[in-house]
Length: 224
View (cartoon, one colour):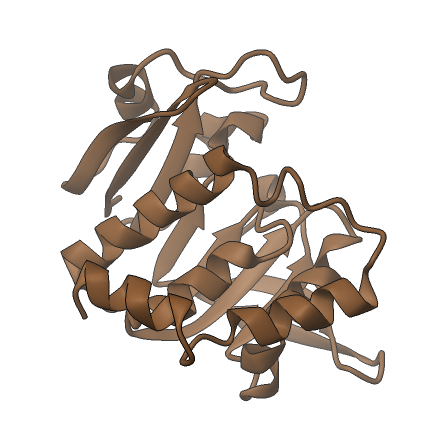
């Protein structure tokens, strides 16, 4: 699928986004989505998806680290990129149910998407985690990712240690920025070269910068 083809399929009738988004707003009317759908957030995610479409590789089992409300998973599924399933992890326990609602279509589809509460800095591989069925009962899963996506590297304490645990030859998609003005941004970088030092890869597929209004977003894609 071309980039224009993806944009058209996302914007027209084939998209599940609007149905799931409507359900999300119905269930969680109190949630402030201004930051989730800020121009910077949307442009950064669109950039990521567009580059993965261009690279044109199957992603297999995807771990979405610091996945928040899971809207990136929606964009990935809508893109047509071959994906076996997506697992979204966030340390905030309020995120999992919201992410499942945001991706309801793919949760219903044999858990092609499922969100869980997990501190990714303590993640081991294979990864054991607890998730919950719709009836509230728990289930222990142990899974191994083919692809790890982290668009919030600026938030990660001991980032180098987290990155070192990722198994060799895993496809990684990583974003960071130079937006130091937010207290939670404890691991920002000044440049793509600084980000490169923190994320060594044996096979680099893409690296670049996206200039946004308040900051620059840096992205690297490749095999660790």
